[in-house]
Amino acid sequence: MTAKPSQTAPPPRRKILIADHETGTTVPLRFLMEQSGYEVRVATTGEEAIRVATAYKPDLVLLEAMIANPDGFETCQLIRENPNLAATRIIFVTAMIREVDIAKGMALGADGYIKKPFANAEIMDHVRKLLELTDGDGSNQ
Image (cartoon, rainbow, N blue to C red; front, side, top):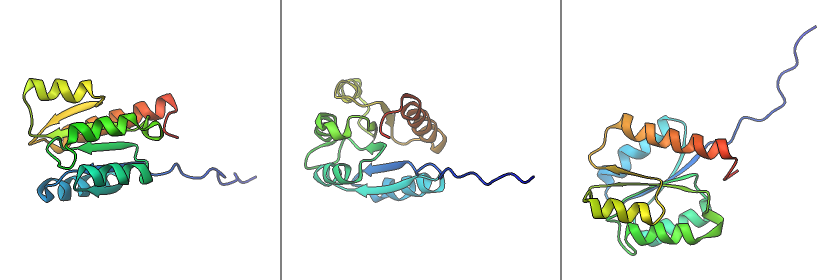
């Protein structure tokens, strides 16, 4: 007797939005995330990030605090206020590393804060941990 092939579909690829105005960050981050099997979109302004997040419904946003129109902190807050994006994880990836900046980002609902320059292993560790948390609690599915 032969075993039947599994009828279950593969899980959907996890979606990441990179919101940063610097191609020096977005290009390598996008490459790293895509090589790790994630589906990626990029936004270069806060307004674009909110618009893309609303339509794309990413599992995770990698957000630069210094993005403009609105800035990253306000963008984070607006994403958090959108009930359709409630399960979206947010990690600030920024050179704004004063304690007050980190505290502000976390108070606005960020799930993590990574200082630029970052190591690829560091960012991938944060991404995987947050997406495993999302898998584990059943949200965003």
